[in-house]
Structures are given as structure tokens and as C-alpha cells.
Length: 398
Image 1: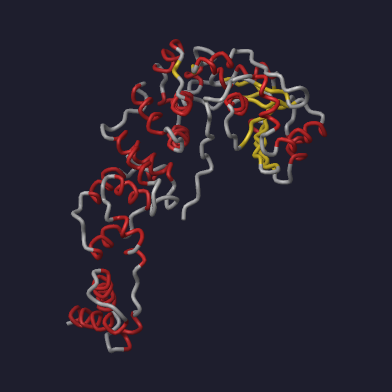
Image 2 (image 1 turned 180 degrees about the vertical axis):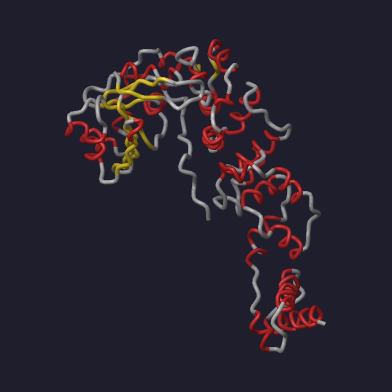
């Protein structure tokens, strides 16, 4: 069984009241937050909840982790929070798991870019600078953790949150980091938001070729993990940023339907199958060289095969490809997944050797013939398997 992706999406409830007066109550209800607040008080640092964590609290969303910014070095707070700390010196960040809450800590910082799409150069700065470097106004709010949690909102993210708008903070936002366009699709799909008109103009002129394939892929995998992944990929297509094949939207929907049911539920990483449905490939350098959609389509085009034929077709295929083919209509793969692939013989090559078959290819051919016959219901039991295997082996050796 394949585990869930670590970037599983946060679920939002946009029908909840967007009222900053509810923030203290919602913050207190966040699992593990008491440990975080105690650590802030113990270390005496000026720390703030920032970004998506504040946005989701305002929306009344379920939140699995939080981002916090610290005036100064975040490491003392990270150490106070838990024993297992992962620090990243280049960006002045640390990640720690504390009482069931994952906390990403960072030094308040300013970012500059040497060129379009380059990774940023960072330096310590004020909270105001830190909020000004962010992607959208709805992610540029903060909540103090060392004093009364009163909303800090220098860019009117609350207003855009209420209006259902994604607004970039400055005209060069998508030049500095074109992957923000991919995040825009993810937020717009998840929240049902629209692009603010000027932001839409800036976004459509973004150049994703200035960014590495790995960074683009990482963002698309996050999008593929979203409940509204189809809408997100369709938005990228509408915006002219990532064209989709004509049938990709429908295939994403079919994949999601298949993966909600047994035997495919929890059998394969959903985000990888959605990613393949949208892009036609898998992640990484090896994945980029394969046309998974075409390979799955060939599998789905096969007439409903006998169990032995289906097993031969499916054996050696990756689970993503199989799930993709099932979404394309290869319903016989349900039987392969639940039954055929688990069928084995009671005999082995040792039995054929003991019966006088010479060591060599005939052994393998005999076993293959017995397995095919067993899959197709033509033999049952050890003796029948051995008889079939011996006949095939002797024929192969003659």
C-alpha cells in the first residue's frame, strides 16, 4: 500500500465567517498550538503566525501545519519546541514537529532576485519586509504569538479574502518567481477565487522557461494533490501557461472517481496519477521521458482479456500506469488488482528437476504454462499443475 503524499492539501471551509475577531478562538483550537505559545513565551522571542496559516484561520479551515516568522534567529524557538529540528541556513529557516503540529520557522527576511526565476538571495529584515515579499495579499497577513493575536494586514489581504480575489503584491511578482502562477491556479481552484484584473495581466506575461523543471514539477504535484485539481490544471490551460491535452480534464475526473473506490483506493499515490493524467508523464528525469498517457491507452485498448493474457499485459507495469488505464476504461484491471496478480503455483522449478526435466529454459516455460492454465481455470491443485508444467517443459525441450 502506498502512503499519502506529504503535501496533502489543507481543506478550507470558505462558508465560515471571515471575521478577525474569531482569530484568538480559532488559534487556540489549533492542535499543538499551546506548545508553540508556551515555547514563544519561554524564549521571549517576537514570533508571528504568517501566510497561509493566517489565511486558513480566517477561513475557518482545518490546518495541518503552521508557518511562523521570528524577529532574529528561529533556532532557539525550534529547539524549545522539540528535539527533532531540521534547519536550513541559507534561508534562515527551521522545521520542527511539536505535539502533533508541524511548525516551519523562519527569520523575518527580505528577498532579492538576481534574475527572472532565480532562487532568491535573502537577508534579515523586518516583519513588514517579510510580508511584502510574499506572493498574494491573502498570504501577506500575520498574527502575533507573543502578545494579543491582533491581525496585522498591511496589504488588505482581509479585503481580498472577503472579495474572493487573488492579488499579487507588485508588478514584478511573476517575473521574480514565475512558479507563483502555478500557486495561483492552486489557490484559485481550492478557494474558488478569481484573479484580480491587474494581477491577471501580470500573470499571463509570466515566463516559466526561466524556472527549472524540478521547481515547476514540485508545484504541479502540489496542485495534483488538491481536491479541485482538475479546475487548477484547466486554469493553467486557460491562462496559456500549461496547455492540456483535449481529454485531460475528463481523464483527471475519471482518475479521481476510480481512486475513490476499491481496489484502487489507497493503492497508489493519487497525486501521481492526477499528475500523469494532466501532463502525460511521471515526475523526475525518468518520468519525463515516458508518455504514460499513451502507454496506458494501449493497455486500455485491449479487448477484455483472459486472466492469463491480462496478467501478461499488466505484469511489470507501474501502479500509476495501471490506475490511469483503469480510468480510461480497462475495468478488467479491477480483477487483476484483486485476484489475478496474487495467483501463484504450488509447484516450483525444483519439482520439475526432480521429475527429470533438465536444467534450462524448459523449466521456466513449463512453470509459465502451468501458471497461465491456473489463471484461466484449466488446472487446479498441485498434481494438475505439475502435469501441465511437465508437458510444456518436455515439449519445449524436444
